Every structure is written in C-alpha cells, then in structure tokens.
Length: 231
Image (cartoon, rainbow, N blue to C red; front, top):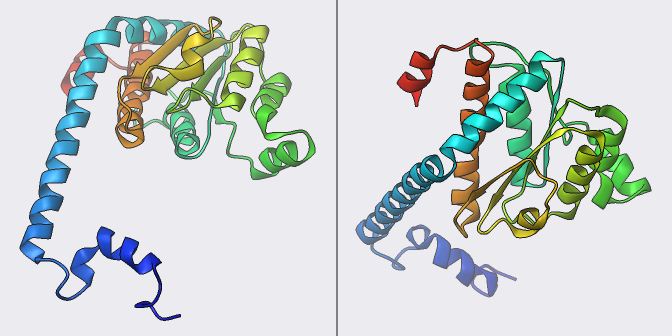
C-alpha cells in the first residue's frame, strides 16, 4: 500500500504538515510552533513557582530528613515506570555522581535489566520494585518513587515494603496525587498540580534537584549562598 493509500498518512500529515507540499503555509506552521513553545515554557515556570510556594518548607524539611539518613549510613533507592523510570535513574545519578558536593549512595531499581525482567517474568511486574527493596533495603534507607499519575501499582507496593522496613518514603506525583495521595504511610508526597504528563515530569525534575541541593546543604557540603545563586 502506498503512502497516499495508507489512512495513517493523514495522522502524520496532521502532525507534520510542513513536510507535505501544498498542505500548509510554512510561516503559519512556524508561528504556531513558536506560540506553543512559549505557552509550554510559561506553564512550567508557573508550576515551578507554585511548587516553591506550596511545598517549599516541606522540601526543606524532607531534605533535612534525607541528610540525617545519609549521615547515618542510609542509602537512596529510586523507582518509577516509563519516563519516571528515566527520572529515577537521574535521581540516583544526581546523588551518587553530583557535579559538586558529596557523593551519596543511591541506586535506581530500574537499572538492572536482568533483575527487572526476571522478577517481571517469574513473579509479576507489580512487585518488581518491592521485591528489590525487600532484598536490599533496611531501616534508615530512603525510598523515592515517581509516578505522573500517582496510580502505578508497583510503586505503591514498593512504598508499602519500604514503610514496613522503616525507610524514609518520598513520593512524587502529578494532578491530584492519585493512589499515592490515599497512601497514609508516605512521609512526604510532592504533587505537581497539572494534568499534562510533560509538565509534571519537568516540574518533578526541579523538585528532586532541589531536594538534592538542599540535602547537600544540610550535610554541610554546599553553602547556602550557592543555593541562592543557582536557584
């Protein structure tokens, strides 16, 4: 079947009209793209300010608690699905291999493909994070779970296991928090008030980088002046 006969081509043409001669005016397409980009940038800036106003004190408190765990030999375990899996890896990398400050023990539970696929295949995907925490976690560690919807069942299961072990539990979610907002065992939950997955993940990135820098400050590795300069 040729492209002209394929009904899916209409969908592609709608997304990229400038690729098809005579389908759209290039100046109009570029103007729309520019306007859309400006609107998205304005929205994420607004969300970041909103998070700072609503959760600023709690972020500072959470970082203090994280610093206490790290100072006592605790480790951080991060987890999430899809795009949140990538963010979990960045959380672990940021704490373990920072651009400056102290290197802190951190691990993403999505990084070991052999473990993730073995647990998914042999036991079930719902426990893919909980089983790892059961084996690796201990009292005084830190569990950071990310979910844009707040409804990922394997993230909830992981938090239940983390709480059972006496770990510090920190959730990042979007919209109204989903099931994570109903989970009364979380120590901290930071909810980005947006229904856009993209804006949620962008704001969550800011949240966990702020947590990292505040934790470094609480440990005495980063002076307050530097936080103000880079904030």
